[in-house]
Image 1 (tube, helix red, strand yellow):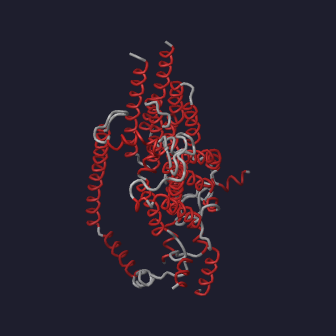
Image 2 (cartoon, rainbow over the protein chains, first blue to last red):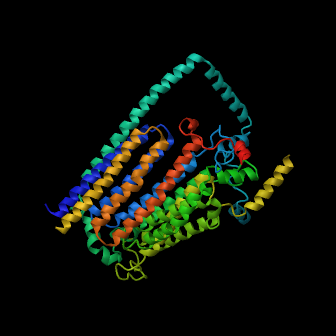
Image 3 (tube, each protein chain N blue to C red):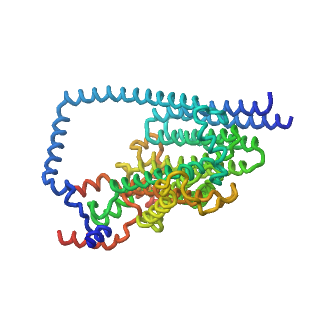
Length: 117
Length: 332
Length: 116
């Protein structure tokens, strides 16, 4: 067995394991009780995909695939940022000095209702 | 006629305003119907038997929904994996589609001057197709703008609320020091990387679409990290429309005539250069830049419109806010 | 022979990286709450990615790709803590019964002011 075939088998095995882990993450993101569980699992799938693409670039000897994994890392960061800004709301029972960075009553639903009436 | 057109361009009047049914004003008993439906829901909720039956049905359908969701996910992944398994391996001969690709591979570099065969294909052989794709993006941006844009016509609140809703309809991340530090470290790299992908499209994988996507993502990250106001300084509605229009017009003039002439078009005035250099590939580099501009503006425009209903503040925002205030004062 | 030594180094580091990811998955399934699961998720984001990309760097030798892989590590180490930070912020801001999972560090602000 030559070194090249050994490398191929090694990368193949790693890719298969990473694929199985991705499936597990998908299951967790389906059963995750809270929205943050789901976002966390999506983020983890992003990391796994980045590793998969990096291994694939080595397996096929194509260096440009690393560029794609860089782009993927940025997109996965953006996903979390935008989802965060969508789902972050102040708790109704929160006291005034709770978190300093929470917005004061920036609830679009209530203001829109006011404007209707 | 001219006056009407000018006032329409300036956004003062809308010639088809009477034709459209503005339901808000022509519907005086809307509040009445609203309260009536609320009353109906309240009486329905007070009946104990009905509510439990509804809950039962809902629980049953929730379970069915879960099962169907899982099954459709599995089905979709099986179909996609099967499709992947049908694809020919890397470097293998695909007997179904070799006639066109042989030509591209054999004569592509010679005829287009681009080392990257894909760039030569989509921006030279099939440039008209790519023109349609960029126009699709432009049309999508216009549709989102029609649906979501908040301007003086459809805003419902006063000046202060208007400003608040526009800026803080979602949680503002820009006050976060961690995000700011990370953005300061990463944003220049991201933007330079996007420009590299954009300009090197004819030599390496990438080109207009992916480079524009990276630049657009960088712009989104910028506006998330440093606030929408910082992004307003260089990107508002006017700059966005100018950039998009100039890019699309340039592309249309450069490649649209092929539609009328047919075949390969006219002789290209720009030299092809040596394959592999930055300035090679004739028209591919300018077309790449045009496509990249359209894609990045579209991405940022989607984000900005979904986030707060406009791209940048309106140009003549101050004047109309004064008008609004005066009108409000007269009413009260 | 030298090639084989390099292969075994790559194999060991790559397997360690994959093991990190397996550990992460086990942790994500075993822990009971999001803020605990984030600890498990951090293993894969930092150590797993580092080990896998390091093994690929060793395998590829000294070339232009090595720099890009190094860039990938730096990029991920900058971005993934940021996203985790925002996730925990969302959790603390939106969970109505956060008090049953997290001990409140800050007491009443009036009392704080009085003590200082």
